[in-house]
Length: 155
Image (cartoon, rainbow, N blue to C red; front, side):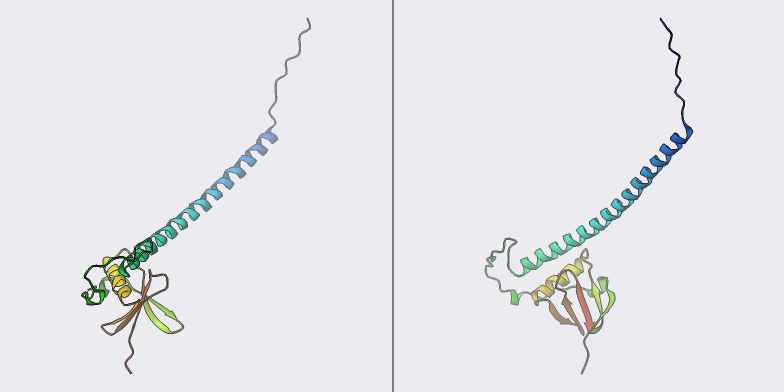
């Protein structure tokens, strides 16, 4: 029997370094993808919060207008919505930010987590989205979750 020469595998340093560089590229790509995914997730959470607030306002508006969520008219017994007392809310307790559009400067609020803001929305819904109070004109934007206000000009 003839003895076979022993073969010891030799490690090629260039091959190992090449493999390490490829591995680094893969790790960097994974880090970048993870960062992008984290950013997209944060944006989605913000959008979800906005959607939740909008839905809450929409359901409150439906309730105020005498509609159920299913679209059926609610049966109101012995109550006239016009005879109900005016909702009291304090605009000083609502966070307002300055804004400007083609009609000029105004203030706006999206403070949906504030009880005073929700009372104001109910009052606005009872007045078809527009009302005057203490020298200011208040209105709701089409989304229903944003309110604007501006000083009423005196003629």
